[in-house]
Image (tube, rainbow, N blue to C red; front, side, top):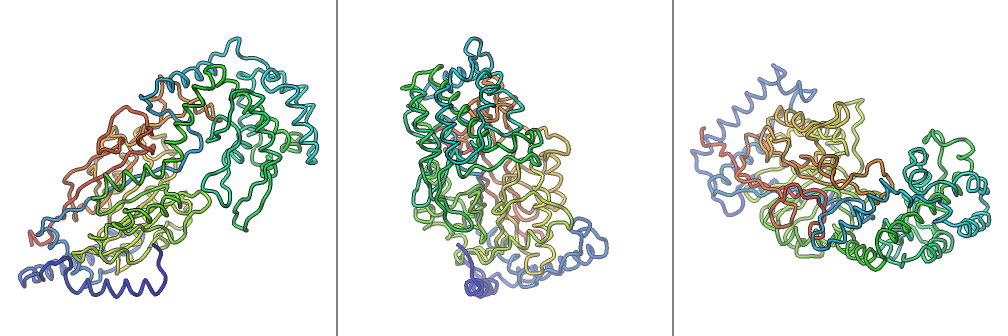
Length: 596
């Protein structure tokens, strides 16, 4: 749902007509209520003048607030009174649906249906932590014959020869202590860089990506032996032209041409000599890395067990992630009036619009979507509650309201803010936001929303509903992460509250995930026994609204897709496709005329 100028004018005309009369079948308010409304509007004006002279709001906004549009104020007042008198409530849900993870093994999941999962993951952990006699030289896994064939391939594409690195160093390294757990190899990015670029490649004309033959992606070929792996790997890297869509158009080339030189300026641990041969050197290290993964899996398990397990996980966690997500939204949260989503792919948006969800909701995506990361904040408005749909996107207003000279770590697609008017004539600003990993953008984004609304007379009277992945922490690292209680103090100073109240419980978690040993960054791996202690178990998700506008009737969180939350359970699971729980709240209006 995007807006051109004609559509915006149509919505503006529709909104104007809605401001002139109550909607949703309600009768015009009686004269006594209209008189009360005028008194309250006058009070608002007086309070605004007070703030102007005292600097009360200005101290937070950095400027004096605008006077509210009297017509909008009246519409908001009448609408809130009508909603309260009709005993109508608002259900708001928010969910970071999480971008599709290409590696089904990267995070610990709860997989009670198949005991083989825990057996394999704990055996991999033991192999890497205490390899003993299994810590063999690299040349026993990635063999001399394999290197010779790789050398011939790399010489054939005109790369510098790296045999000296092989003979004098890498072939003699122990596969675990000297390769997989070598911190210098990690800081040089010699194995992680080629993995990042070639792990999973989206290609033109296919609904499914092309995957490098390895354990840690959705590759579905046979990896039961190292010889089968090597044949497939070599063919993939050098003989498989792939057509890729880029910002400059499409291009077709084999994966080895996609690799990028590793620059010492960015990764200072790499030597000048290694920088010169970084393309063939990272290709060799990438091949060794994948060979070790295949070797480990076939050592701690049997191919028929681990490959069957992987196939089931890929189907549920990766390929069926979008359908599973939409099923939950339709069947469990279809009664919501507002749904805010984060980290939404273009595919999910398109599929949602073609399902019953698209018949029931206005599905609003950012006008400027992130097509590269493919992670966007999205808003769903129930058509019954918002019959005219969204009226305008004001994301650019929010982004232009950041404090001057301050860099806020937000990416394209992270913020979506829109206006809409409900059936009672209440004007809303609805926002969805995906915070950066450390939560350092969360406070500045809220401040920008409040500033943008307060300085625009056409937005002052709007009621804010803000669903977000705040990425806040129970025990934040000072100066590096956003503390959840400090975040609460921030929203309270704007006269906002949350579905968790003014002071959220820091131990009321909405995430529980931790990395396994089957991923490139072993320094971030958590032992099975340390999943709870060292994992990302934090209170990250929030729904905010005006403290004087609404009050909470009921709030719940959900990591099952069944409106229930199992504490101390790692997720995603095969039945719940995200590493963030769903958060939902039912709020009711505070009648503005009740005490007038």
